[in-house]
Image (tube, rainbow, N blue to C red; front, side, top):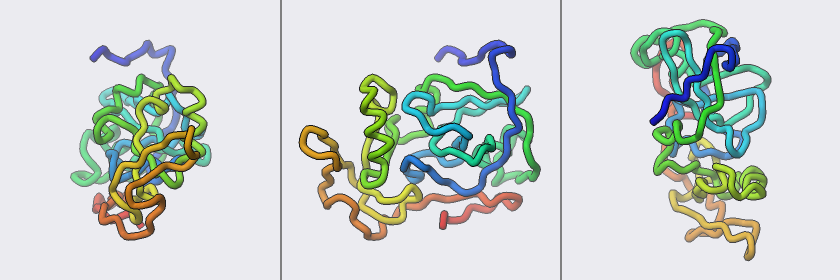
Amino acid sequence: MASSRLSATTLAKKPVTPHEQYSSSVGVLGCKINTNRVAYWPDSVGCDDICIRVATERREVYLLKVDASGGAYDISYDAWNFLVTGKSATESPAMGGGVFMTYEVVDPTYCVPLRQDGKLPLAAANSMNYLANCLQSPNSWVATHYVLYNIVDSTCKYGVDEICYLDLTISNQAQCPSGLGVLTPVGLDVKNIIYGTGKEEKAP
């Protein structure tokens, strides 16, 4: 794979802060991605710009942008810890505020290892506004690489771990084998790494 690096003059530089709790405003399922490699950026989640390269002078990570922040440049605590210390937060948890890092939007293929099956896993019941917007641009990355699951929430507490299908010529709702929006415990976990301790805890 070719390098995504650009010259220093083309890279934005911002103070990047650690983010402890996984969330996704567009319904990306945390149990289907690597939640330790997520970006929470000030701008909304688009249909093509979902993969971000963040780097210090020594290290770099690729992150999925699946949620908007309140203006901060947040990244998963473990990713921030690795960029600052070179170690996982579970191994050597660090503390601190914003650290200036460079970032750039890169081709989504750089984030393929962060997703199961290389596709963007979305909650069938709660991602339709986002997905419908992307489907209006049928050649966008999300429009051609999404998969819907019958899981209700981004932390995967309720639903059924099954794939749903969308045919907009029939309905604007996805069709799921067990019926859309089943509210039974799904039995999948999303874990957060607690800031400062490095301990893993199940997402609330």
